[in-house]
Length: 243
Image (cartoon, rainbow, N blue to C red; front, side, top):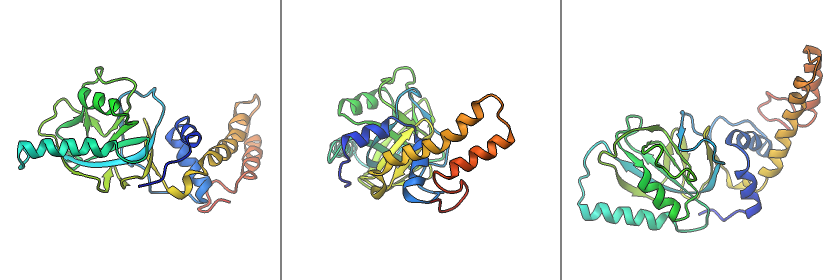
């Protein structure tokens, strides 16, 4: 399980969107990345909410077929999952792989589960599966899901505290996750503390070009100059290993 980050760092990460975190990771790690983030579209409960940031509590579900275990075991698995979700350092993010994906049949995330998880202090949820009860979900609890569906079908938990794959992103229990309406990114432990500085450096570089583009009289020559000025803050845009 990952050690908790300073509250100030976590607050700074929550204050920016997930694309900004992806940009900042390039500044911190010194290279562009083609892995470590979701690679399929998402939907979310409330696009206006700030990003989810927290340590992954991972589980797997199935919904397309009736469970082969007893009702008692189904309940025991659910209670063990709830106990697991609130264990260890926080904030926590519930990360659930739907093993029926990409043909998901039943929604785990609905009005009841959102109420329970928010009541337990979970920061938010990320799933490759479905959500439902739109309009009835707590608007202060973010669910980032693969899709929307009307039924829970035979949804049940089959594994907890295991590595999962959610929309192309591999996540291990305890990984630091940042997610919003764009998708999710896995933040390497060794890069996390440096992200506030990475956020500032990435934003400063883009600001040079954006500010130039918004000024009256912007043209190709001014673009060339702005681009060169931006590169002075951190290497060439398309380098595999920017400085």
